[in-house]
Length: 259
Image 1 (tube, helix red, strand yellow):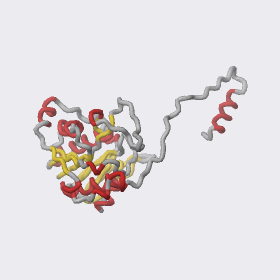
Image 2 (image 1 turned 180 degrees about the vertical axis):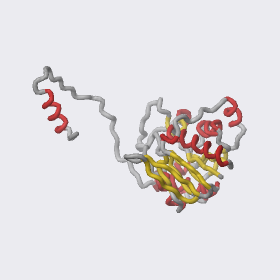
Image 3 (image 1 turned 180 degrees about the horizontal axis):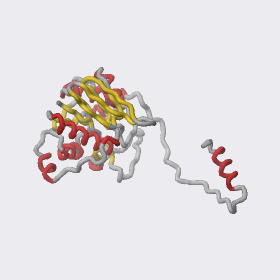
Image 4 (image 1 turned 30 degrees about the horizontal axis):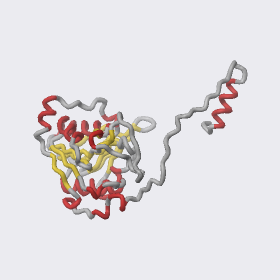
């Protein structure tokens, strides 16, 4: 079985963030990490590979100035990597990202493509649905358990009470919830050494047959018109004594439209 894990590089959670004049996040290639949600997806891809054999590939759309996140996935146990990189991709929105990933998945060929539940820099969670729409294949979303039997994939999805079950024929896309496994493996020293020998291909838009005008800032359907810093000021009210305290708490909750 060929499993493709779609991974995103996101800004490190330990560095400060800023927006440029175009209202886009300023990204430093040396300060990016593997999207934290994708660690669980990579782990699940490797576990499925260990059960069913075949091949597990990591796919990412990236400026390609660094392959640190891809190499980390390879060190965890992924077989090879594919990076889609092109200057025309700068400023792409979720729809353009889905278009590119769908084309790359078609070029790679897959039985099952896995996605994280969201990215730590955007928290949109819509890319898997967009990719599935472009490919015309089923999407099983927010899986907390994943099983493959023959040509069928089945998931459990956490519900308000218990869980729901969904299944689909392969090929299919699956978005992985963080709770699917509790401890993504760390790259071992042997894995890190072996990762340096594993192949990583870089594809451009031309390699995928995608016109530059369908991606990037010009084609983006999302526009950021402004931004402001989060206020750190907090109002404080001190009530001395017990008399009337409960009523004041109730009044406050009503004022804030909490109840």
